[in-house]
Image (cartoon, rainbow, N blue to C red; front, side, top):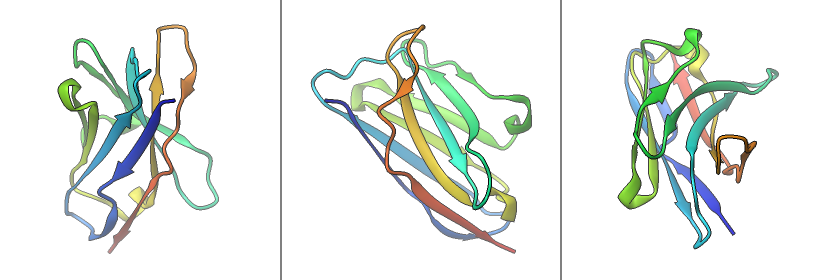
Length: 119
């Protein structure tokens, strides 16, 4: 069974930076891509971006381009999300998920890590 565990969240001042990690465990772990999502209080879950597991190239939806950087270390089964110039509106629970193949849905969601940005 694949399990994803996020870490690195916390309380930070606006303007700062944060790096989140997502570690995948499980002998059956296979990935086409891994992604980051976030959900702010009272809002729907939002796609932050994803990284190709084989090639390491990252994709970001337009609203996330610029301050978000996703990378992965396949040897460690770990994905990272760096957020620069944090804003109060970045406050959310950040989740990671795995896409086992091109046609698969996002699955194996982690429990999330809370990020609180104060002004």
